[in-house]
Length: 185
Figure (tube, helix red, strand yellow):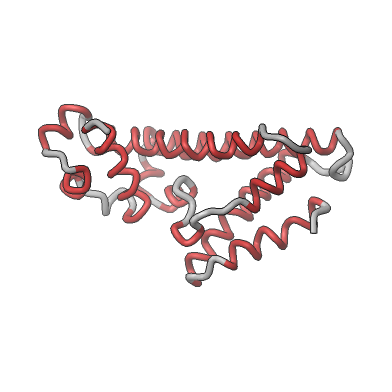
């Protein structure tokens, strides 16, 4: 990994652990094993580095989800597999968690990859639901867009509940509570 990649990866980890304000340039440099000169050689400053880190996190999260969304199986099987996949629940969602960071949400350049990723996720889930409705896997009156919004909200809420109680089972309970609405038990 080159210096720029180490800086981005360190920033990703620190943003997830500490948030934007808690992620100082010094902490980034220490974790990356890079000097101040290296950081400013590759990035204009902390906001540019944070943007690169958030974009990489968004790309990774989207690619992982897309692999399941476009994999084998029916639309319902792919959606349920996505919902039940293993996650590091107690760390929270690396993108969803950024919505709680006022400094990220106040900066349009930092906010854009967060809101864009969540919009993409809702769109892809809506596509799967629409595919499942067309194939008769889901009720014909199931609204794909609203269902997708509900799924993302249940997942994000599941992360919050699990983190607050330090109990990953609460995320699983949130998903299990939603699945019967899709006809899954």
